[in-house]
Length: 232
Image (cartoon, rainbow, N blue to C red; front, side, top):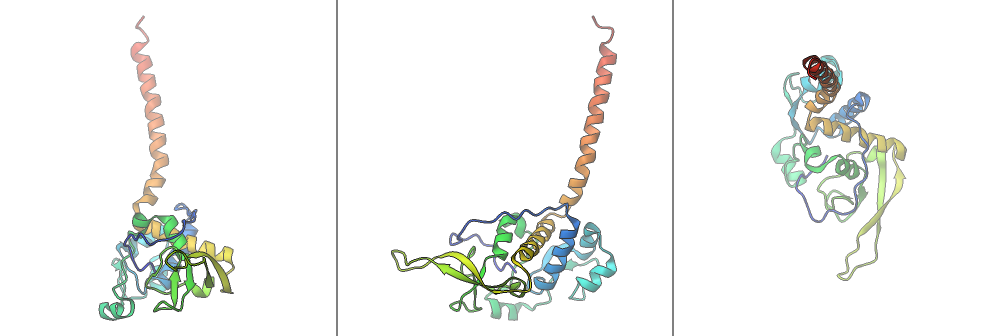
């Protein structure tokens, strides 16, 4: 879905707060389903394996292989795309990038805002543009859920250019704006997880580490008291 990882000075607008939560397993599961159904046809997650995703998100092998694997890959293999390189280059200008690290490169707020910022633009080859990332080389993969947005343009500036000031939902999709916000948040949450799967285990271990340090501190205090009890 996010066709480029390069940082561009042409990016416009402020990012929205994603508000995603890695501890929300239901959101991660929904995000995985949304990503695999709408994004994985073009974008790989080559640093993540199906088996690791199943373990981390509480999914069975059957659930993953039946509902989330569309390439025929084995359970222990990486999440790659089946799209051939040459057709992809012909359609999009280059092979769509791997998104394993997009959250670490761009940040979750950027992904969330990007997913919500597509609008119709007849001047673009694919008929779509993006307010956050102008001239993105891809269509809106979620338009059926979000609907179609039109750009609100500014008055021409000194060089005659008009800039996107806002977006208006011209044709509603299958989801309400609130529902689509959650859809974008779930995908963002999943991509943040994909960028660092170990973060889930690190969070769960954090509580035990703190409890261990508290217990160790208490034992050290008792030991100090014992050593110093006869010292006047």
